[in-house]
Amino acid sequence: MEQAGVDLVIDVGANEGQYVRGLRESGYRGPVVSIEPLSSAFSVLSEVSSRDPDWHVVRTAVGPEHGRMEINIAGNGASSSFLPMLDRHVKAAPSSATIGRESVDVVPLDRPVESYVAKCSAALLKVDVQGFEAEVLKGAGETLDRDEVVGVELELSLVPLYENQPLWGEVADQIRGHGFVPVAFGDGFRDPDSGELLQVDGLFVRTQDGSPQGAGRP
Image (cartoon, rainbow, N blue to C red; front, side, top):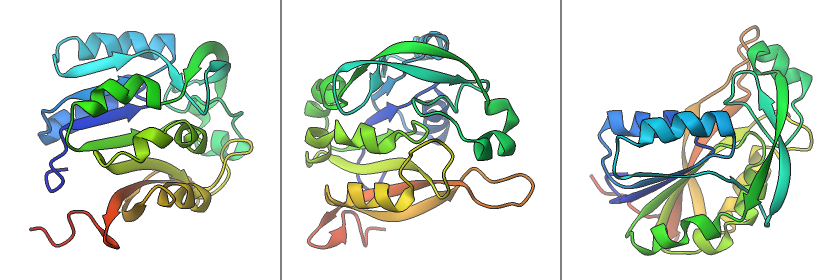
């Protein structure tokens, strides 16, 4: 983020603001816009962000088009998804089992972030939506094709954890189609019994002349 001069973070699937709180603790002080659809999580998100004038929040879900959908609420909150959870996920994290559903508005990502991206010079887009990442990217084409967006962080599943979710390779190819290449992967969700890696966080950066932007900087 320092190398690319990031001055905007777009936090999709914000839950209760854990990702942004981590950024603040790490020293990032620039503007953030967090997007979260669930009423309970958004209530907490609104409270924690209210003390930070550069942290803006929007209550909506994002997807390929405008509409209204039912989201499955996970017991741990953070694993909530539009997609039904598979037994593999529940076995690895019993607290994530579905406990209810909530109807939420859905909009393409291009709409709620357009005005923020227009004011920045370098934006980082983070998407953590539990198997729905590919659908979010479908509604973010205008945003992803803007030069101001220099990096994308995506949660990627290595094995199926939700019904009909695309796995890491398909999502990586999708973001590559917008000119981004992978530069780092972070250790993520593991099966507590076998140790098998189930999910990772992937960082992708925009290419320039065939190389990642920022390559070679100290």
